[in-house]
Image 1: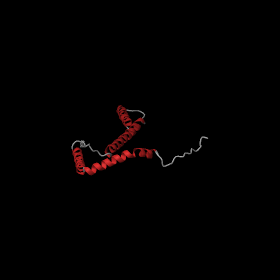
Image 2: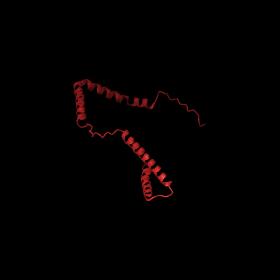
Image 3: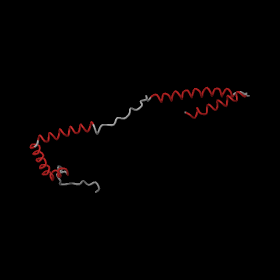
Image 4: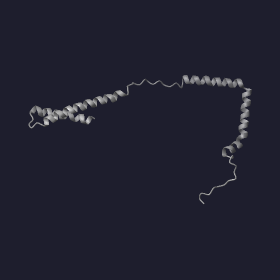
Length: 134
């Protein structure tokens, strides 16, 4: 029962658009005849109106509707900031490796002198910002 085919005696060529066309055809025909009569009666006037519209359009495009010139943006190559970051990161890694080797060599000593302790503290303090920067 749910999928029962619905049959209709309606002509498939009859659509809503076709019915609207049938209903308003006399009005469209009358408007078309009036427009044709007007164009045949006043061709020079219509031509003048079209030329005036074109001139007015060009004038407005060149004066009122002119796009605003924006100041030229500072052009920077897109690779430069990324490449500089890579170079900075590589330099930080090299410095971290050098400091780590120095800290490892100092930490292997059994007894540290005053200068060794100062160097160790200095190296550790230099490593902290490098590891948090990247």
